[in-house]
Image 1 (cartoon, one colour):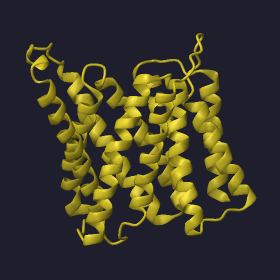
Image 2 (image 1 turned 135 degrees about the horizontal axis):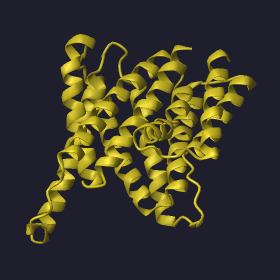
Image 3 (image 1 turned 45 degrees about the vertical axis):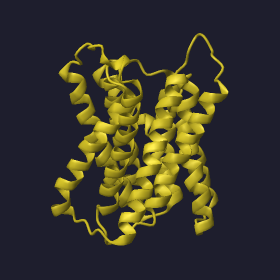
Length: 287
């Protein structure tokens, strides 16, 4: 039960982070948003470490660094796939891949489920696709490049879960602090390389970004790092497969905030996905 609750909270809060990150990306490049929010998350987690605890053992540092590289690659690929589109296809595909990769690994670790739990997992995977689906009057076929980036994004996100499963249980938040730092450094080095390559074309003054978009970056970093805490606790309390499936529901948090903040209408197919996700989670909790 605790694992399901923590896994569901992870998905919601990740979705909140994506919402604010998407808003900020309207005026700021997505990689810049990811890099800056990564440092915000690092500072936030570091400030919490005296209260929650963080023991930086060799294993904690190694797992955190590996997860940080996977995070930088996975999130960058996710933004690239969303930019290529169509979002209605690549977003659910990335989420499902992000669940299947650790589920497969979990099987080799010994995760086994009864028919009831398998049915619940199936319901949640279907819900992931429905929640992330945005109906469009003009159907667009996805490009091979977009699908490849989505698969890479899912593999990267799934790898984060796999790696952090091996972080020491007594390390507290050490691994995710290292993960946030490594990911932010990785992306900022990339941004620096791009700037150096294009510094002549970037010499022209650009329109000043309104402050509210930078606050969106800060919010994305705070929510993303909070989700890191939830999924670390979830991984240490239960099955990798269960946590990965529930985490894949992160589009749910995004559409909830879009409905509340932006007054966006939730499509019937998405609402059905929300109901199916809640039903599947309830069944999984008692299975």
